[in-house]
Image (cartoon, rainbow, N blue to C red; front, side, top):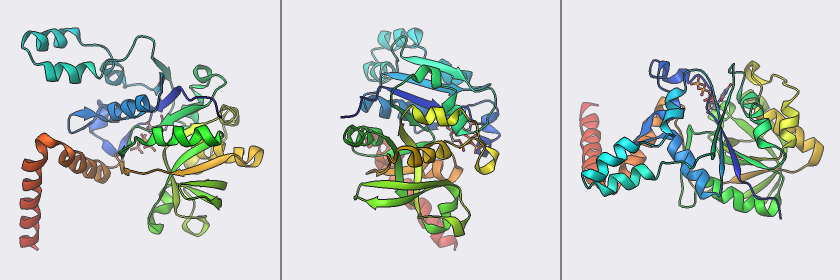
Length: 297
Ligand code: UTP
């Protein structure tokens, strides 16, 4: 049995340029899917997986993100006074315990690997999870929980994986598989954003990881990889040669790339339709829109 995973790192120090001009003043992770910021989905997923310590790697201009986790007693009082118990419950569900959240600063956006390395001292010497809040995953059993359960059996390093269309594969970190065990694969190589002719597969890494502290030591070298950035993929790949304990986990669920505009809009539609109170009105509107589009063609 592997040691329990109780810490998660949320790298949120990126510039979010694909959402400019909004991200001039709004952190990408505060942008809302229906009525909840992206970061709330990530926190809820981490909690469901048993995470107790939440480490945010932030940067300049992310103040709204830090404020979001403060309690809001004035709003709570107002809701209580007005008897709006349902809203009060929703609000209280976002409260974090004192001491559960830590913030570290990444002073320059040198890459995802560097962002994770910035949290090294807070992680210490135990396995830890990494969640990228802009990858939102709709799943019956939350994705990280699925991974934590699988990791309890395997230990080592585990990355969430999904098949992507071959023509899009080069936008991802890709896995070279040595053994396919169904939901789990053993990995013999990993490469970040390869040229199409160098792609080892179309099994892509997406934003959920469970890692050993050895990966942090690999990141210590601060070697730049694809795009001139310090890549997390490269540091994990080094563990294949060192210990042969890197696994890909084919999670059950639907992943939305909320770091891109198209992905964010798709997620908005999917999560909007999934809400009981919105479903009928929203679905009727979408059908009308589709009919208008068709008529215009
Ligand atoms: P992205 O590749 O989506 O970059 O980062 P980005 O800056 O957020 O967005 P674009 O591409 O400019 O639109 C993936 C994740 O890694 C974090 C981001 O915050 C995001 O959660 N990240 C990336 C960092 O924390 N630091 C970095 O140096 C790079």
